[in-house]
Image (tube, rainbow, N blue to C red):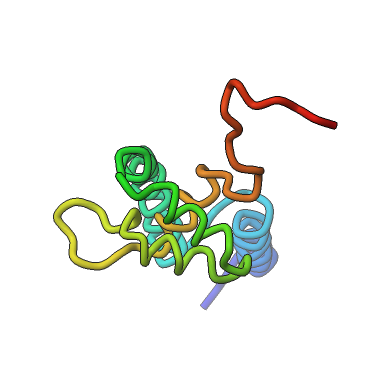
Length: 128
């Protein structure tokens, strides 16, 4: 079989070029595999659902008649147990579900800002 003298270098160039494009595309070009794209899409949708449910959690907390007692229980819990205390309070259980959601509880806990001091009444006198 007769081949042109440029055939062999052309094949090498195509293979090396394809490898370079693949390496560059996946490392610096932002290309991802289907599995990575799926994982990222699921994480983004989960984050969006959690963000959309935080106002519901805050409204449940605001309208709860025993809000003060539950907030004190949450504040009394250690930092790593506050999420569980909020879940026990029932504020992370969304309407239509039976179990609380841990991600919503964490986001709601951040939005409640339980680390700050409790609200002082407007007519409180500062004595010091």
